[in-house]
Image (cartoon, rainbow, N blue to C red; front, top):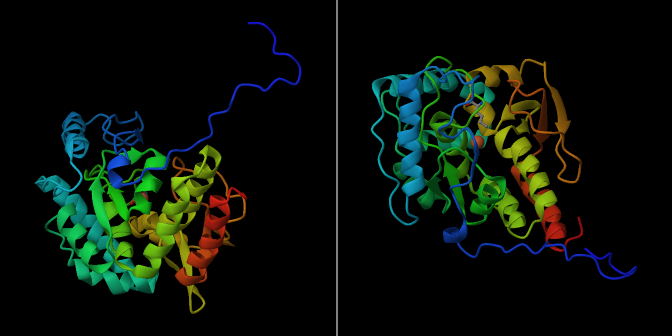
Length: 303
Ligand code: NLE
Ligand code: FE2
């Protein structure tokens, strides 16, 4: 190729982001991890029946049409038993470890140990309470698509159950995590406002901004803590759905920092078990206000 003349404009960088105009334009098929292909260190890697089951459940998500009910999934006795264990153990810790918004919404869903709730039934409750809905997804969705969904008050949720050999903690999202961790929080309007703001900011974000928003999401929605009368309580879904992590977050072993959307957030760690660092909010009102300032700046491309 001939060398460009000095001063001539270089190749045009493709930075234009085409924001989706509706949920129909948000793809739920780009799965980055924790889909039906299990990694070698997954507790279900040597369990062929579990792997086949995961593939069947993934298919339900890939074929789901927006606007139609989430197909009912008949859970196997072993899956129901795992759900029952997670529900029983986490429920014992909620009164002392979960934030007040979670405790207020939790009874609305009437969770029972002997049956795994269906996404569609929970989605109807959310639609009534906050206007949010659940859309099935096969695994960990591409961050841009996942965050874009939040802008349309839509939460992408997995439907499979974690492997029965390790109920107390899993690094991957599963139906226990979605239903116990995310769903009750999504029935709280103030919390939804905070999450919605992250989604709106993602619509026009460039790749670097998406990355920062993903970390913001991770350290709040997934692993956030909130201060209540001098003690810290969990609102992050990754803590609320793991009875191991619920105890860990109060053990004094992890570092606590104040949350601020403008700070450089550390790398997310999916691999090494319980979090070593948590960010603490003062209130959802305060966090939603701070996020709004951040998101408005981001929209103006001032960040
Ligand atoms: N560690 C969580 C649990 O065991 O329920 C899942 C976190 C998904 C990001
Ligand atoms: Fe999650």
